[in-house]
Image 1 (cartoon, rainbow, N blue to C red):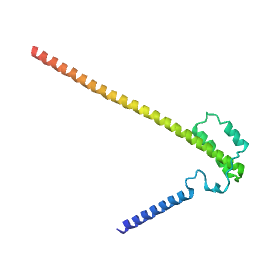
Image 2 (cartoon, rainbow, N blue to C red):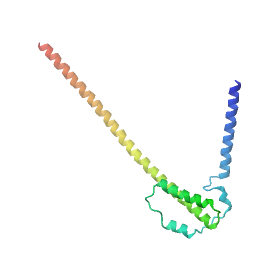
Image 3 (cartoon, rainbow, N blue to C red):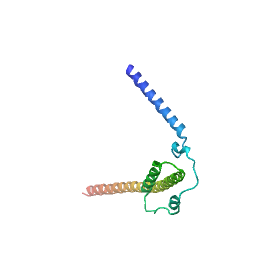
Image 4 (cartoon, rainbow, N blue to C red):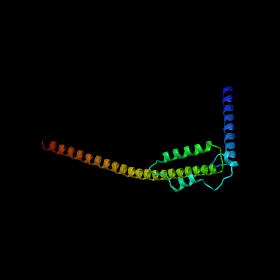
Length: 160
């Protein structure tokens, strides 16, 4: 009885701790797409020339979405590791835009995969129904043949 009470108290304390941690994280982050560390840096609309050429000349489309995310995330981490100045905040914004773009591409790909899966699932259900219908026809035909065989045997016995 005492052990159950201790376990219940520990479970209750863990639940309270997790709940409070969740609420505090939500209160601090406020669903921001960036880390709160960059909140004190003013966001400027000017983007350095390297970022402009990246935007003007997108990378080749031969990269898979995973490679695209990997390349953009390494760019984001390398720019985040240096001290944040006005031009670098523009490159951070560019990195965030690239990550958003990669996420949109992945979501579109997911929608395409889901529609293809639904089509395949519908085909599978159709073929499965056709298969079960054919199996029933085969059983009925075999039963008819068996009945004809038994009828022929009965006729032969009556002839003798």
